[in-house]
Length: 294
Image 1 (tube, rainbow, N blue to C red):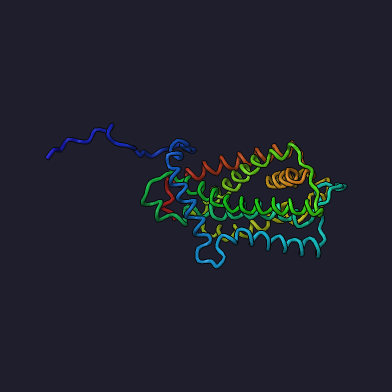
Image 2 (spheres, helix red, strand yellow):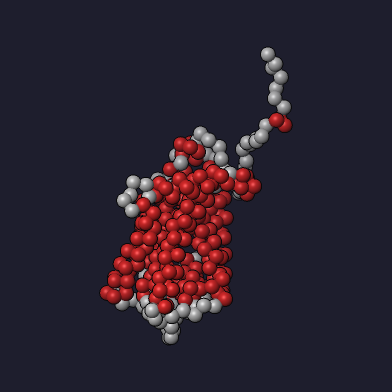
């Protein structure tokens, strides 16, 4: 029997501990793209497993939410649906609310799922090696499938409303920003989610606050009401909410009217990048010891 040790060059991969605060190896994550795709399929199927209507809920849920918003905030509370007063374009409140609800469905769903990354996947993470960032990345892309379905429904309804004369739009070059806004939405929701996941490994009760915090955040964003409802003297403070410039920019991109301020948007983009990077730093720090605390 040959007892000679195996030459190091024969190993396909060598796993070493790292002390780097931010160790995001994009090449390694790309090598695990098949695993990301597998997780995306798993998460999407699991979301609608053992349901009567299956993926149809991706369409039904935003419609029901938009109807509720239209009745409560539009008809009963009579909150304004204008981002800028004095717009001459006709825009039904239903379409206004729908742009916000489908955005929030993605954002809150991604934050909620990502915030429990370590807790929900502790069994597989403690036994099998793979880049831990694969899990939140797959969650973001899995929820993106539902978002695109809802976005397609929104575009269809927008076209129908325009054809029958209920709505008016003015398409501009600004519509080309929609892909960039979607990427920013993914970065912000993933960053917030992985930042929370870094703390929930030690403090489980933070999971209880996530739902409440998201509900409060929703009402502090221009989703159930238009931006023109905010007093001018408080606008600078309100626009520091990184979600606000994204939503108003999306409405401007689709309708061709509304509110867009480049300075506030760049601040939102900067805050998004900071949250995403800081979230990755905390995520990488916790992943080295999470199995001992979860």
